[in-house]
Length: 560
Image (cartoon, rainbow, N blue to C red):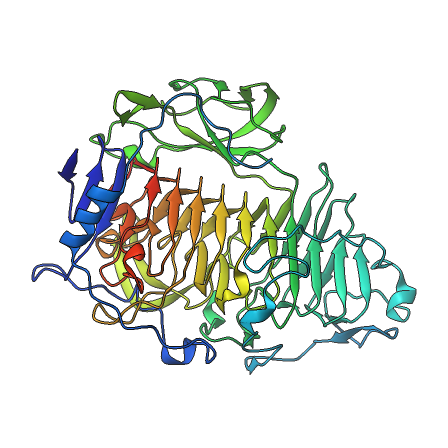
């Protein structure tokens, strides 16, 4: 069944999957605003050739291809388990340095590492081009961070600008002013220890940074002093004011937490007051203390239904049963998926053993321009994606509130202009939450699979890459992007009238893209907001890009 819902929203099934495809703006509706105008002339990599000429595709053509070529299958049968399986300068030894930053400024943009890594450098040694290779073993044999002798007599402290050129093992909590891992250098967190590295400034990786804890340990990289008002945004270069994690040159990033089932549906309806949740399949890796988000499934005609999340903590896990520390506040009934099939609420596990985070007062970001493929699995990125004030205000429930805009190029997890260097990359089991900007951004970076990833409580389109400056310009493509078993949960933008095209999955230009078994839930915004959207200028360079193949994808409890 194909029916009209809201503004330019085509729905397959019975309220099951919303996919908006906007054509030319109507006279009574504004054109695409600054929310999509993220590309700038100086934001384009010089080694990426101009796009091929393309034939514009009308919305009617897209719908015809979808109707003929896409089979939308309702979820049925056994629920599949989500894949998870510095004061005075510190004395230094040869190899690494810790330099004082006391009293220094640093507002300039510095060219740290290669501005344009060669696309040919993306494949791991021994791997076929475009194919994922096994992650290398984590070397735990570096000199201990806690040993003063390795630093020339003094361990780095809060005022230290640390520069690592040899192998270092973080075996204790540490606080620094900034960190640079040079080519040939490596900082590895001790696998069997729970440790935190806090940095007031940037962490740049030109060598190796590895957080790969044992099952019971937690590794955290924290940016506790981010000032979002100082962010500049844009470009390939590391900027001192734009505090976050930068992977440049041929740097290698390994964020590799213990495997957890990312999400699974409830086996039945849940009632307010329940303290036990029975899942459709036993979750792997869940443990006491994990934080869960139970998604809203109430009737959409009830006010506030799309915001009725339960955030709960696990007390115990046994088989498919999860006992909670506190009772559910809301009911979460089963919902129709079409074709006589009903499904339970999605239960998202937001806890991971590897954590990269800013703070509630200042959001950081992860920016990857390295020619070497990153390994990012089972990690949580929290308080990321900075925003900037615009000078405008809007009247919210508590009075006048500043209108903010996303900082260009500073997202949750950002693969930036890497072309074919990212082919074979698999981002698996990652959570981006409490983000002020887009969660997952493969910008002009091809061949990335996002598997069992979650965005929760994020501003702007959660899964997205940079749009064109206007509706008359083709979008720069990202080819062969796959979203598999991914969830966009509670995507927001304020003030709501400006969120008329807010979406969980922005299915942009490129060929070979797929969305498989994905869910958009709790998408806020005005009429025209949707779970899955094809922007009007997102057609790729060939007909295969006109319709992303989508299988068992679902939109639920969204306000648009």
